[in-house]
Length: 144
Image (cartoon, one colour):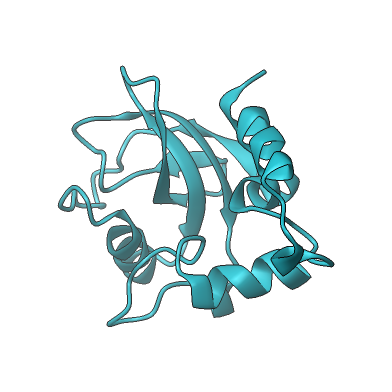
């Protein structure tokens, strides 16, 4: 069983009445249903590396500067790490993860959703759409 399946199994055990009738019980189920795997890509020369620990703002800014890239959110595993983390990056037309945050560290695996334009982070609140309750809960209850 991989990490995503384990989280989904645990969530079903922890299920409670507060989410009865919701389409998805967790962000993991949402990403499993709508996400896809992206191949780690090389940061293009025209895309600048941005500060670590600001992946949501970094991916949003990169998409803004390079409209041919799509803001993507989900889970990623840094190269050399066994631990997946909530993360955001951009995706090119060929399905490559273009990651301005982990340009030095490198990402080993990316599973995420290219979010529709109306769901992308907005300044000044550049936190993750799949992390913030006001954006996540409607997605869990109704879906994309």
